[in-house]
Length: 107
Image: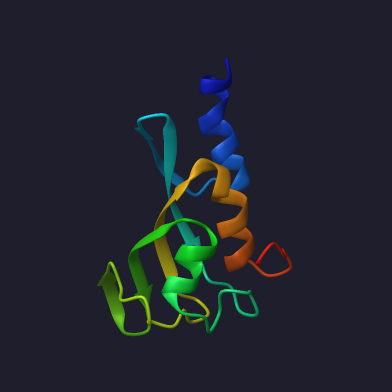
């Protein structure tokens, strides 16, 4: 039953932005689309910091300079940037909290 509820939980945890769920051995990874909100904890921080904090990988960054597939770790996240991120299901809330305003779970 838990396996059936997992996609709904993942969608709820990220406001319905889950693009796909991927089973990788015993782990379940979610592919999510997120927006870096103005004033969020991720704004102005490098991609690598977001990836480390949420055990995730940024696959696509769409910002003021156009799309960047697998952006370098030193790339700074700007307000309004759109991200496609692969993240373990257990880290969905953390990565969402980092990119949204008013949620605080950043280490």
